[in-house]
Image (cartoon, rainbow, N blue to C red; front, side, top):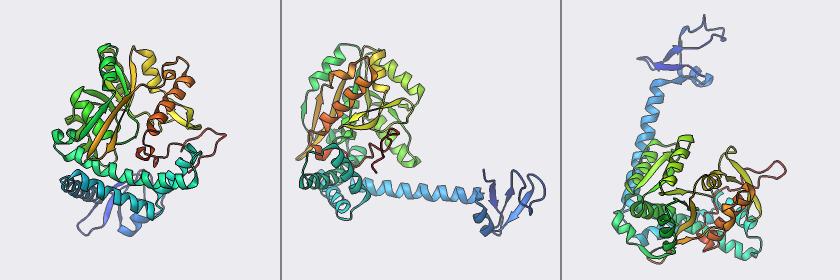
Amino acid sequence: MPPRLSCDANGRLYGSRPNADNPAVAGRDAALLYNAASCRGEGLVCSCCAGLTNKVNMLKSKLVIGALQLLAALPLGMLRLLGGTTGLLLWSCRSRARRITEINVARCLPHLSAAERRRLVRASLVDLGKTAAEILKVWFGDPARVLGTIRAIEGEQLLQQKLAAGGGVVLLAPHHGNWELLGMYLGRRYGITSMYLPGKDPEFDALVHRVRSRDGATLVPADGSGVRSLLKALRQGRLIGVLPDQEPKRTGADFAPFFETPALTMTLISNLLQRTRASAIMAYALRVPGGFRLVFREPEAELYAESLPVSLAGLNRSVERCALDHPEQYQWEYKRFKKQPPECKEPY
């Protein structure tokens, strides 16, 4: 690792190096004086400059968050217009998001004609922009007013019946529609426990953690202790939430077909169902004129199979059924097939 350095009054850098393999350095851990150019060339790190960089980055994040908060004051229709326009720009400039969406749509929906795929890719990017803009309302808007935009709810009695059975419920929410709004509704109405993986930006990370906790979610770390917390919640008959269509690490995952293409799929959900008396339910929040429509539906029966390959295939088929309900609102922009078995080629 590079040494930690500091600046002197003249802006020059000084510090100590762990070993003295440079001839100019006499002795291990010798105190050195460097000019800024040589430090940059040797990859040395100045603690003063690193601290300044962190403060600048924090200020940038705060400014961005402030700007987003101002945008959130706009009416929902105006936010959707702005978000949709951003999506059109992603389409028009042949962005990375467009390229990934084209690959995924062609791979997952090969029965569509070229013209149909083109229209779906364009619509998906527009809806991606709308989702991003709507999330500002969820994060910064008045929760009561945000929840007031829910125009209809389908199948909620299924969730209520499963919770009443007392065995706990694993709610599976794919990246379909507006999952942040769905989380707000579930947290405030039922309380929900879910895993949370911190982001790279501490300011945005704190914002997301604060918003989700405000809305009734109990956030647990994405590690062994978090899994134990999920098991405890299920055994107490409570509701937990999992995003089933994100690509996990290779540990705790196996390949299963997703739209007939191998996709690395988390084994956590299957294991939780096998170790408890819990049942599962799919849920998503679709965009409709003036608001949202929440949908709850049963997963594929194979999800409960003792055979792990059968269960994982059932999980992915459950996500497929959700995605095909208004496919333009599914997040095709995600690199779902980035990791592949050795005999298969990564498509991106």
